[in-house]
Image (cartoon, one colour):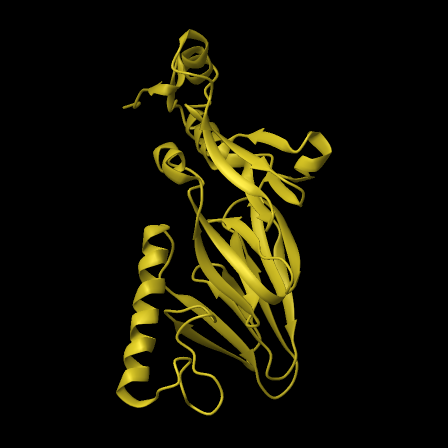
Length: 263
């Protein structure tokens, strides 16, 4: 299990998803908000982005907050962020993911966004904007995994975490396209086209793949030229291994499609 220890200069701010904070020095303040840095904040001078202040600006801010909270609820994430700011000298904050595995610091230079699986985000500088991206289309919705992704833009550092070890690939090195277990996708750069497809057709071989292969009915597809980060352990595989160690077995003899509930 890895952790990230972040050194903050005076006035520097990082934010994390609720539940990823570990420790801080006493000169680092902590504030919980319902919005990421891309919403609900006024520019300098007190006016809103729409050019009007007063009640109109407050209404727009409230609508922006409600929209982002609604998106995070749809993504199945915590509705709050925690912000940490160093005051009166250099400060230190510690963060970690929720599963045993690897962490990675992504450096954004403003030219390309990064997309991350909804459980991968740990923390980011306040100069990095957070958003929700919907990818995969109708097939992604039916697949149940990977349809909702988190999007990071701007400049600064984003820290992500995954289960097991990370594997870095570029689809361009493999003919421009790779097909991946939906639970293995951690993050990818803008320019990569993400989709979800069925494992074969609804024929004998397709059903054999789904039933006896334990893969379900869908695979993620990643196309284009850019960095892709995969994890070597899926959350489902970890849960099944833990359940087996406790004397239960989530999967029945035919694999993941038909499962049994022990006890």
